[in-house]
Length: 450
Image (tube, rainbow, N blue to C red; front, side):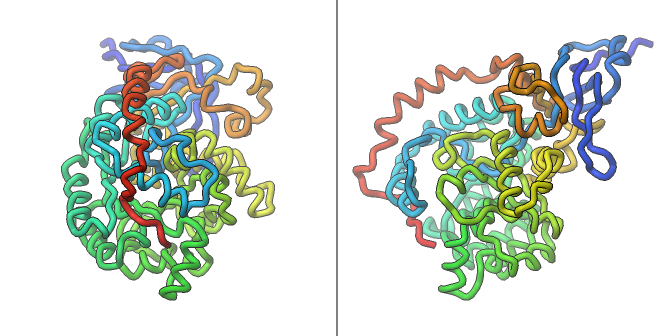
């Protein structure tokens, strides 16, 4: 009997693999068979020749990687790229970003999200964790463009109980949308903008409804020092006493995590993860970075992130991978940490775990969703290849991604986006920019005061 055709077969590529001990390796001259949006098999190219398929991709000279995950961003903020430059974070928030964000409409959020998704798909990102406002608009963009997303409607205590209620309502209504590509979270902004009572209520709602929590905490050392000076506790200790650490929680940034915080994170009953976005920390001249090695030593996965393009100017997770590896070498004083293979592990399985999808994405293996990117290593800047992992982390660029696939569907082929009309999105944003950038009203959506 002739087997039914596979939906997609990718042949003649090198496939990044994980062994039983989650060590990164590479399978040469391999083929990936995809059925129903799921990886069915990873076999030799020779074995794949006789298999029928609806669609075939010849990927010779390319490496197949699990799609990258942007573990913490604010996708619609691409509309603010470059508007608040060379400022400390207090002025960045209070004088520019939060006044502009008070102008945002749902249409602005949708346009920004659409442009962000285009940028991420072109950079090999197949899933992103977003923490922002008007998230129904973002969910609609995710649905139409085919990417995967972990979405949370952000709220502050200054909004009253309605903010928390909207966050819950969104999470319940959109959970499992877009044919399962959307997962959701409760999204309090941070311990310095959400009070203990609201954090405790959020933890209770998360446990009741089986939802994770995504928030900023210990973003920088100043926030930690302010918490200790005013209240005698760190932001992480606030998360512990309010019950947030008893939920599955994704902590954005954590550059202010202290040694005294590590036992609370290690002993938490929830699944704890941290997202690191190193480019923004360099831009704000923060003196510390996410303590990746200390978190690794207590079993906390650290996922890669960009934060929003207003603070990072880019949604390039490839760059985040490279910077994470280099900054960790510098801050630990150890050139053997982070290795290129460890960096690839952070970019794949650890990032998938950080957003709660470690059982379905993050590796190319039978039973995993077919979120796959093909990276071309034939350009001069990636040749010759002596160490494939080092070439990927330190020589390749996001622009070397040729093809991006989510759930077995090709979203970009040979650098051509198939699901987003970028010129149209740019025109829409351009028409809105004068009204969006107006700060004459003197309003802010919030006050930054750690």
